[in-house]
Amino acid sequence: MNNSFQRKTKIVCTLGPSTEDDAVLRELILSGMNVARLNFSHGTHETHLNNIHRIQKMREELNLPIAIMLDTKGPEIRLESFEKGKVELVKGQTFTLVTKSIVGNNERASITYPDLPKDIHEGTVILMDDGLISMKVRNLTATEIVCVVDNGGWISDRKSVNVPDVDLGMPYISQKDREDIAFGIKHGVDFVAASFTRSAADILEVRKIFSEEGHANINIIAKIENMQGVQNIDDILRVTDGIMVARGDLGVEIPLEQVPVIQKMLIHKVYSSGKQVITATQMLDSMMKNPRPTRAEATDVANAIYDGTSAIMLSGETAAGLYPIEAVRTMARIAMSAERDINYQKRFKERESDYNTDVTNAISHATCTSAQDLGAAAILTVTKGGRTARMISKYRPSSPIICCTTDETVCRQLNLSWGVVPLMIKEVTNTDGLFESAVEAGVEAGLLKDGELVVMTAGVPLGVSGTTNLMKVYVVGHILVTGRGVTQQRVCGSLCVCKNTEEVIRNFNDGDILVIPQTTNSIFPQIRKASGLILEDKNPNGHGAIAGMSLNIPVLIAAENATKILKSGAVVTLDAERGVVSCNVNGKTTD
Image (cartoon, rainbow, N blue to C red):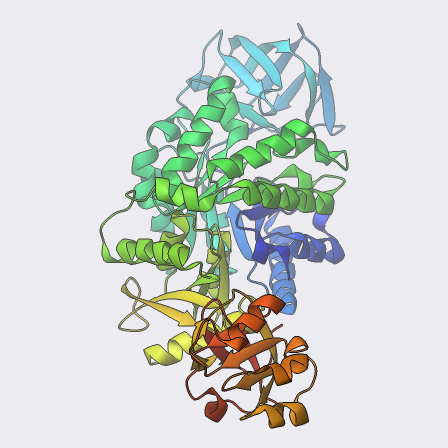
């Protein structure tokens, strides 16, 4: 089974030069990538379209709902290119930023925002490459900004330029962003990550483009990269589908020591609202060049998971690093290790009253409560638009959330949601058929086994988004017989149905599940070789019950009419803990 099914926290990977080989892309998916990110600050429409087609082809071949995220350039400032690709800046030297387009060298370079001189003054601090290079403005004209380097280092093509504490006059949506978003809509992206989101109005601008392009079924992820975005988070959450904690620019725009505090606050606010939160930037940065991360990086990834992040993201590690596959595998291992350490049942109880009182929220909360109380193997939800699955996800249940939908886009978008395993099913017109179709999809995907208990939720009338109002406890497979289990085991095997001891001696084969009204000492040799006992006898202290307990095999007593209903040779699951005998929905054993 793909580890994405076992892992609750999702992984976003950025594509780039390091993933140009199809074999690498395939391995990223198989190693745990849930969402492929295309960074439109780099590359051309031609290169991005090629990547979109590769992902679409690969996800169809692998039958996995890998989503595609378009990350906009946004109102950011970047350097243009250098003559030799990179230059070294030395502390104390002058370095000039120019607004006209030139090929850069170690004395000057072009910037992508021509009006920057209007927004700054002498003494303004300018940071480059996520704050690694620091300069102070000495003097400026309408076209040139002369700076003195305070902190030097290497700088290369297209690196970021930040001006902390300065309100830039850039429009939120540039012509490039508009063209990029239209391009993404045309070619079927699932998410748009809106860079440098400052307010709810910025997200509404993106939604307006969706409306103008006649497409509304794309989720927006607001990237929080400055203090304005942090301060306006509540308003932004009302209009966005999710948040990315983009710690690179955020750590440049605000004091570094505040980043961990803000990260925790943002994660809690977002997942409590039932929306998705991605923690991003430099999570395994040393793996750009090394096959193993630092201890601090491993701890950073784990801490985001302890905080409750929906997803964790790799940027340069997979886009341009030397070890893209190893980075994904490492991140997946860290995530699964942290998740095993978290007591999700305790967390759920601590947040028991933390839910809104609309119907979908109430049903989602009740579903999680029932799943926890019953020890359900899974929560199975059927959804049109995905909201039910997201509401269940926000309570962070310990049971996996299997979400069935008829919409391929929704299926892929749910692949970003914490704990959700999205599956496609066909349209069904009645509730019973809907549940059966969902269970069958879970069984075929290897997520459910015959005899397991699941808590299901859906909405009536069927096919209408936002109508979740139904919860049902369901045992996987067709229940043939019920009774009372006197042991806790579960076994799948072939039946040997006998009316008396003579039939047992004549027909029993080693490993059979023995079905008989009651047992006696004369068939104890056969009982010792049975994989389970199904008895019509109701006595919990009877011969068969005690024999089964002493042999530590599953025993079901009080199985009324079992010898009439069950047939020799049939393969069934005996679940003594739940007191049921069932056959698989597709007639096959699942063990």
